Length: 121
Image (cartoon, rainbow, N blue to C red; front, side, top):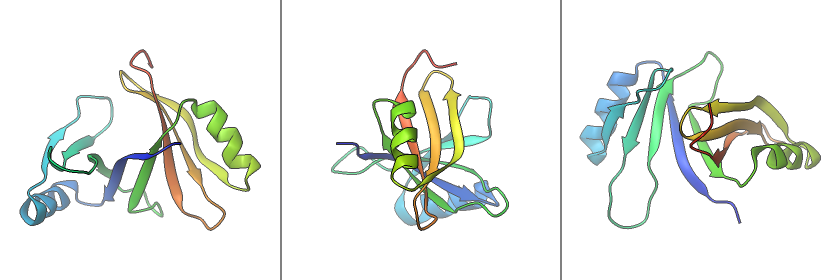
């Protein structure tokens, strides 16, 4: 069974939002060294929970996206479409991390699907 393993917050002012979550929940953040402006969010190391990330919000885009771990992005893209959903962003490489695609469920909620693969480029 695939599980939510990551969340993404989309913000118009990333620094302000990162400061907010740090102040409220004590979350820590670190700028990702990849090709996009992206910050990794560490929510803690004890108990249940997941970590996430923060990126600049795209006009008309969602404010929050849950990312689900899948064995094969290609397989799950096909499942999304067969079940009545659509693909908002096709499969793309996240260098050193894996493969990512974004789907939309039948009611318009966006979600991510991540296939771990450190050789992705």
